[in-house]
Length: 498
Image (cartoon, rainbow, N blue to C red; front, side, top):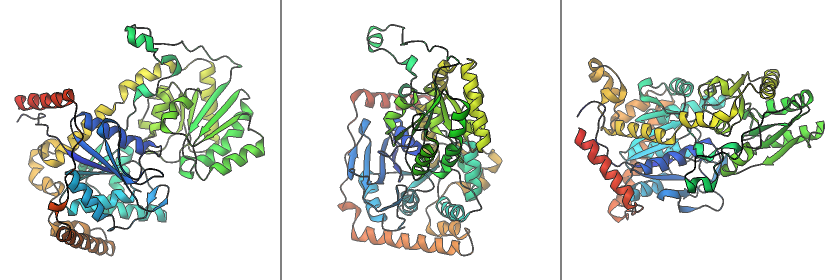
């Protein structure tokens, strides 16, 4: 088979994470959009997450996407209580019912993700982990999280990070081979985040006309109101304290500025108290928690999007804001500088004075009409695509499954194949798995090996007590005729070129 051309086969994969809809967020949107695009490309995808209020059991979403809401105890920020082994019986049942081949976990703080990867490797399944966050190395919480990540990624087939900064952070935290980590960024559905002046008329679509604009945005005058939008979880790491300190100073310097803040969290009380102390209720509108489908309607009410985060691996919300035609003011932390070009953003240090200064610069730039925000949507639409994310993720699946040669997938030179390839291609032998875990630390390595042995014994017990033959295989969602034929045509085309 020629280099770069490989036979495409249908992959049965499972996305596992504590974070999924109806909770809004970047990780939740990433899992949903990636899953639907992989289904569009002919693969089977299911999602395993915990039960949310009013959502328990099995749910079907758009495009036949099946979601298993497992009833587990949630202890903090929609994260389930880590139990290590109690999730295994139901996870095994789901995986066998759905004939899963690859388990894809998301997010470092997800208990379901870590446990699913451990159990999947015990069951002889390929695994992928996607990291969406950045963590430090000094505080107690980060040290424990990094040790947990080291445990999980010691026996994972491949890792995906959403930015190059995130990749560097993950490689250092988990002591990974950089060639086992790919960078695949987030994306947005640009059609769902159109600015007001680019909202298409229904009659224009039906008639096939070229006029797609409701109106052209008029220049902002010196006395016009400029609205700054903030949509974020109100937690410390999202820079809510910086936001609380900056708002009174920004409003004092710019009387014709208003704020719209959407989101919920423990810092919401501090934000409300600040508004009462400074009597700013008429200039700051707090919307509370909003659903993801309402984000665009809130964003198009503003001119500037303010993102004062202290740490961020990617920042999908700033891409959504730029797609809606907002000028972005954000902190220069983590992977944020990789997300948007400089003409769409004004960067600030994660400090109160610098955020106030950067916001003032953005306000002046809009009033002087130096920024052409009406062009942002079309530019973002070209830069980010979920179809491209799904295609690159599919290549990772093909690489760990052996459909792509190791030298093409990992990118090392032919002379290194024998030596390097053996370390990167994970086998399922228990003794080899124990060797990988044993090197995680003097005490941690022994503890990790004990967990793996217990997990393996539990798996043998489940196989004896609940044989696979007694588990019914779930029927796949019926594909439309044109979808099935297009998938078959693509397979035939790829096969004919090999």
